[in-house]
Length: 282
Image (cartoon, rainbow, N blue to C red; front, side, top):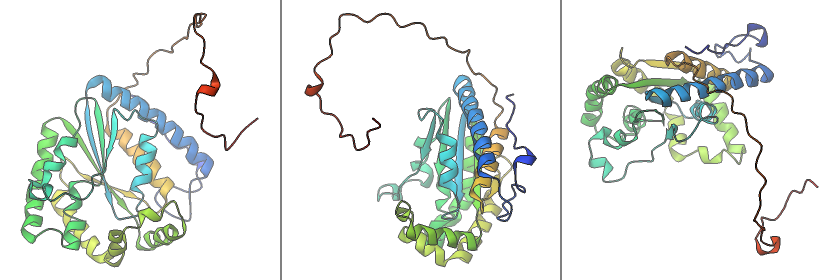
């Protein structure tokens, strides 16, 4: 199995347990993240070569850091192999289907890694708290979800579930920051603002969800996410440890000298429409 990257203790000011008073330095974080992303590429090549199937679920409160972690996982990977699924609200037709039906088409085929940025657990979270499902629909989900997931595991899919845990104070700080950051205003939806008022309700829903769905075949892994950099490194490190990949990096390719190009005359530059050069380095 490929050697897993580790963070050297002397590179960190403190530990990675989520404490806001002792954070990893930016230099150490970037160095470790770069190492982990190389390992993720190795993992990807192994998944492709062996036909392994991986489904990863990311759940947690709004502003818990799920999206940032997903970006760091996927940014160096081939989107044809590692895909992110973030489904919108169900249509009227989908609301009449078997609940898991809209998720099934997105499950991984051989040689694929599928990341669910929120998943079928919407029913145990937002739908339960906001009253978007009936009591019977909720109870049926709690009964059938463990069996559905056991079925996926029996079929050969490796199912990995992460819950990003953020404190009330840190979530509020991130919400306030989004108000002043033009690039993050879109992250504050009406649903996010409503969830802000219902911290206890979401906590109770999460506790009940864990009690029913934290099963041996597909356990929940909790990521302490008050410090985003720690959460990203801890989550990726754990993910790498769960998949028994091997280093299948191909031999280095030597590029031959390009043959001389003949018989081609480029059309006049004036015949082409170029993007205006707002920034010109010359």
